[in-house]
Length: 337
Ligand SMILES: Cc1cc2nc3c(=O)[nH]c(=O)nc-3n(C[C@H](O)[C@H](O)[C@H](O)COP(=O)(O)OP(=O)(O)OC[C@H]3O[C@@H](n4cnc5c(N)ncnc54)[C@H](O)[C@@H]3O)c2cc1C
Image (cartoon, rainbow, N blue to C red; front, side):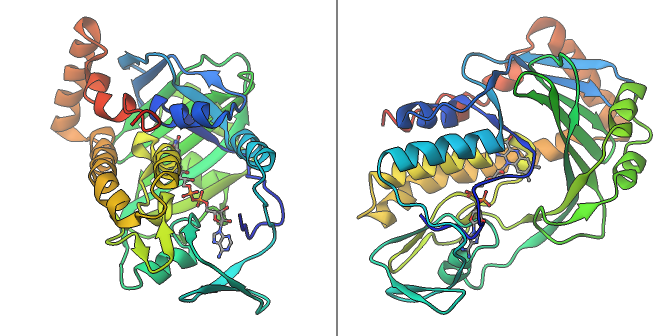
């Protein structure tokens, strides 16, 4: 495995691992420290009013990214995978890769898991354009005490904020999304002033403003929509994860799909075209579902009043209905196929 970073670390942030991704971790024998998530709770951001609390079944986990990466790396080393850190691939050729220092390395097969802006995607689909979605996302972690083990989504006109606890409940993961016409560089390297985050959510309810008042650092990302990359293989190179299908974060599935990709491709390394044909419809469906969540979270005016009333009514009679519609996603077990 080749990684450009000098160490396998992640700046503080969380991941929701759903049962479909969790099954891959279980099958690999990878068990990062995790909290079991009990529900997804939709709340009106400006009033704090409960809209719907959707209970989750078994197998939804809240994980710190650093813990997941540590657990994956430890298991990989245990089974003999050589991990080469601090090596940036600068270019890909027909039968070799070139590192940044000019060194060449021959390759028979290369799995490009280098993300949305990686060289592998550039090599496999050089003309595939991306489009700014008109949304930016901030990401940070705030210390808390005894936060309930659930994901809260505080929704408002043109913005929403996701909160969930990590580790022993003493850290709160914050992802905040705002619609805006200008955009920033894609990638977490862009730091922003916490005041900008506070200003964007200044009309949200007091408890949210109190949490944001404690934010000391924040990263900002302009969300781009690349759609599913039109082809996933070229010669010896096959893309997986965000390189193949960058996923907007509104369904918390990007990493889950990447885990599924890794498991399923491992069983079909000699037949990447067949693997892609089987895999593409599921991934495309997941990306569509993520995009429609963004629209539903950001309602304003009449559609907001109607939508929120419908959610409150559903909360009284059948709060599990919305997530039942995602069983095709969560119930899939790629390790058993
Ligand atoms: C705000 C936000 C919240 C999210 N929340 C969730 C969630 O709750 N659940 C979920 O499942 N998904 C979530 N996602 C999506 C998830 O983060 C991504 O889908 C996932 O990280 C993709 O993994 P990847 O390995 O394909 O790519 P990446 O995580 O981008 O990893 C790519 C790796 O390749 C390395 N690399 C890149 N270029 C080179 C090079 N030239 N040479 C060597 N190494 C290179 C990078 O350093 C990096 O380590 C979220 C995304 C966002 C933006």
